[in-house]
Image (tube, rainbow, N blue to C red):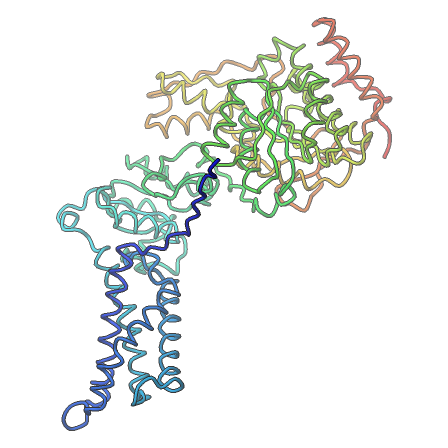
Length: 634
């Protein structure tokens, strides 16, 4: 039988057409500089260039061109179009011209390929002329390409004021200039750095600071304002939005740092309208994920509830720190399918295993844990809708408390190094079934930490998350789209708010913060926000006026619903950690592990018997009236 022929092909090296044109252009510029250097050398001498140097030029010009262009190629001068040359490219040009000129001198002095040597004054002049022509040609091309087009000089289109004269603002101005089809022209910067007032950046004047935003808007009358500071605090955004809203000026913003990490690079597609989370009046949480999540690198990480709002974001951010394997676990088929598809197809992270499993099933969870042996488990699987849990208390306890104990125990049996429970502020002095179920979950994790010292167990407690499924923001947005009314529980009700990416970054950070068994960490949520203020902001951002266009109705608190949530219990005190945005909730007395186990056993029996009435009574008694047998002094 004839063997199949193996056809090994060497990688094909091919210059692109634009590179050939650039090399030809540089060759011409090098020749001009070389000949001109001789002309300048003998400018004061009577007559013309001596005959022997004319012969030298004719014999060596090709040698000089080939040699210098080769050096330019090695320095990467032909890797981009001339119109995109920037500051770093100029540094590279200086290096390439310097090295090529030094090698030229060495060649003429040491190798001596020609009868006559190269005069020193010619070598110096040639260096200066070559540098000027090579760099100048590129800068001239960029200036020519970035000049306003004929159409834009005739009709400027929409006029834009850019808030932020830093790199983000300069990027906006350049993009508008390079893409006249956007139909927008930057007419001025606003920046809080007073030293920049009156300066021209990218040819655009800095008009003043945000404290003068109203005067600036009145004087310039722009069609649009762009907030070009990805890390801008909510107070600044709110100030700009309020001033623009009063003048009916559209406001758009650059994405936040989290969105920039997730999105593409084309600015025209990344500018978006200001959203409610942009104007909450709190500084954004910015964490160096590569540093704080370094403990996840090359580890097997499991995320339960991977298809939910928090679980999915944990998956996205964990994938950025290069884990060995990311195990996505969820009992909802559709959610699991969507997050797996996003990770593999959209984010191109292929080290993923999607596991369809229910945390309430002990045998299945033991099987999954033993199969994948995760180093770190983020337990985000939970039922969280308060009214729904009030109607289904058996499932609330089964899924939030008992399932947490099962997941923690099976993780410890698989020798997991860390276990992180995603908890909630509703677990503090709970007055609802959902809050009580999460309090039991925290106790289950603390008890597991006592029994399994080789696994670091922690709980991370935070408040409402903007944009998560069932949260107040999408509900309000839907009510506004329907013309109202917006339903608010009480005019004085407040809640803590945080965006999903912020919360998840701190959850990941907290996973590497715990030192003692069963730590409870509380995220810095800033100041609580009045729900009615949130509703009014959302109405105004939609272009309406509260009450005049969209009504606000107060429905009254539901049974067990608190006007103000708390982050710490009466028996807890906050203690700082190494992360300034994470506090440790320290108990004066530690919950007894044996008491937690017996309590959870009792709840499991009640759940399995389906005794709903007894469950609620026992829950109230357990959470709000604990006996002395459940604690022991540290």
